Structure formats: C-alpha cells, structure tokens
Image (cartoon, rainbow, N blue to C red):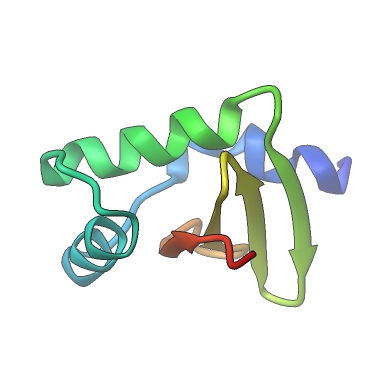
Length: 85
C-alpha cells in the first residue's frame, strides 16, 4: 500500500476522544459541535493542498496554516494546532 495514501484510504476510521475534541477546538479556535470537529478535520485532510507525512507512529497533516496529528495505528486525531511561523 502506498504510504502517502494509507491515511486517505482509512478516512472512515478517523475519530477522536472527548478530550481531543476540546483540545482541537481550543487550539484552533473552532466554534463547531463535537461531531463536526472530526468532519472538519476530514475535510482538511482530504483537501488538495494538504501535505501528509508520517513520522513514527503519527501522521502529520499540514494544511491551511494548521497541523493535524493522527495516530497511524488507531486513526485517532490526537491534536491540531496552528502552524508556528
């Protein structure tokens, strides 16, 4: 399987925890419902300008001045934060 497409092929498995929802909303100043946080992340990961890289056990998705961190084994969205300039 192409490593670059592994995350994209498993988008249906993407999820996060309650603490993950709060952390992502706080870090990115998002004003969306808990269920919408995962959908928001999926949309960003699927966008054409998203850069996916894997380092160790995590995927890092750099898109629209933010970085989304996803566990490569469980497909849990760990956190997301604004890119530091």
